[in-house]
Image 1: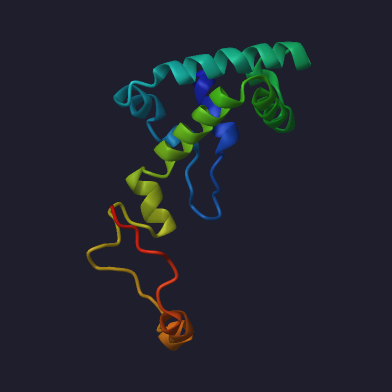
Image 2: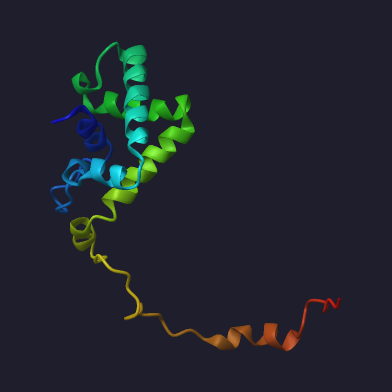
Length: 141
């Protein structure tokens, strides 16, 4: 397994009880390449390598699960913008994967035009607001 796949699996390890795949199951690199964002992965891995070396004097792959998560979270302090971009893109790729959406019951298409069920509300609670009338001043040119 390539080193960056070990990193994304540490972030999204999957859950066998729920049937959720790990992050390496999706084609994260193709997602980044399609969106011209490969540099985020490269820059994040370089930053993580530096953090691992400074904090543990080990490579990321050699660490236990706790050390891996501590190292990943330490990246937040080094460069919050890069950290947030990387995590955001990983989540976007993972949760837009059709098979993941099927497992969580979201489907791979938006719920509309079928719509979402909405509970019946009592719209009479807004009657006082309606009766109050206009609460702003007309502006004329």
